[in-house]
Length: 324
Image (cartoon, rainbow, N blue to C red; front, side, top):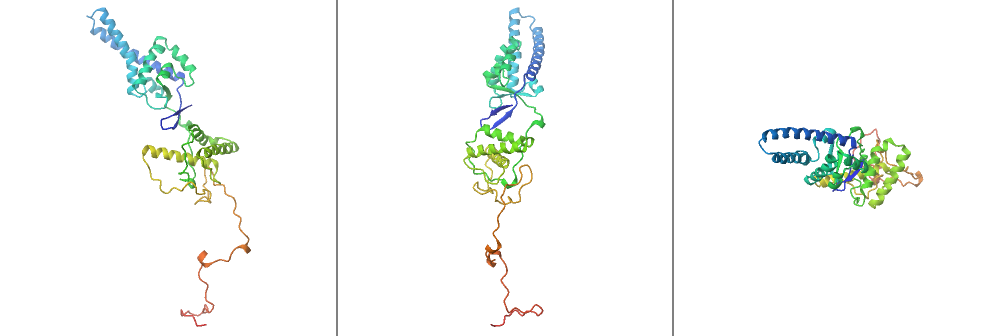
């Protein structure tokens, strides 16, 4: 898996294409181009039979350049990196930062591809792909592109469980600008795989990641919050900020400040059953009964004490109190 960072500093998990799938896509593209070249050549030769040999040679060279070089360049430019062969194999050509390619990228790939694919029968491209860590040929290196897989099995896509409800909006005041992309990617990968780890190993990894994240943000993690829940809540806050930056400034009303003690917040005592478990709270030590102050009617909202000369219960009350 390759970690690509976009212009918005968002780490993307793109899977570089393997050499067999890339070779199959190139063979399909070459087969289509050769068929088109032969069909057009036969038609042009039949239409220009009256021309001399030099003119026919010039037309043959022009058709070769247009169909076998200009054709793939035009197709990749218009389809944003998806030729017929790549479309059949589920591949796409993207920039190094994960964005779609433009004409200059397709032009460099196409011109260098004539040398490393057509003139050397693909030997140079195969060697360059084997040497490169991400399987890039020379055309990709000079153009700043990468061939990635578009169709990824759904069973292998990680799902990040949402944080518990009692942590919603508790970290809206954190400064996340100092957190590196590698740490975000490590947190996300941990949350997607923590159910597959040993509980002790998962807990120790969560504590280490939570410590690193708290160090980067400059604010310690709230006491009583499980480290995995803390990681999920901060990651959700980061994703919410990215969504607001991309789609507009949403309303931030109703969010609690970061200084509020989470473990003692509303709903924290009840816990949140699920992936991350309830908050870790210490038992409350109650003072002995003798040390407790007497109840006050103003404190607890109790009713006023009954008067001493209240009428007996078996007689109806007149509403008046006899004088003392």
